[in-house]
Length: 254
Image (cartoon, rainbow, N blue to C red):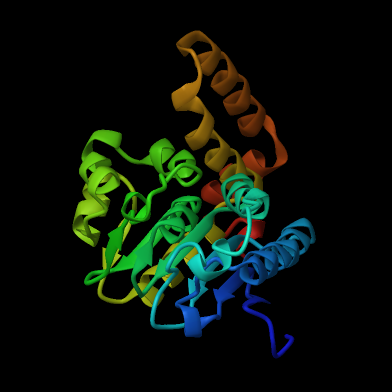
């Protein structure tokens, strides 16, 4: 780990932990931080490819999860949002589940980063805000992951006014999945649960959750019938059913 990294990646016990570490500006999305985030995602990709990464956890040092764009930097020239788009796409498209562990406030682009993860575990007292309209811009790029998972109507007031909203409101809108007093314990429980499943089955389930709602009915049934039959007749399905019958753990849990 380099001393000047703004994002760190560590692999242990099948989990890749990516930590935003720029507390001086509340983990704002500076050019350096986003570049380091993509470098950390390279580490995650390598671990996943080697079979050492079963889940990716995106966390942070205090006080904030992410304050959004680095506005001081944005004033100096035209922005290039491509690296941020790439980071969000990589979290969304990763072969393994991605989990945001949020123990501090998130604003604007920080909410988009969180929403790019499959699961978002948030401390009970955390508040969010889409502050873009208050500085004369729109929450444009981050609307892509956010509105794919959350109710636009329930978030309309927050988008249009920039007002703060609570973790409970965010969960009600579908933006986050877990509200808890102990983020780390909840994330550990989720990671342990993910590791109970066969890697391919988990990967296909993540893909299913994303694609089935947007697929026409007949196409969805056709694709899912083919997937079900393939998995039931495949090696993992055979191993899982044999382990169930023999009252033992399947090999991927050993």
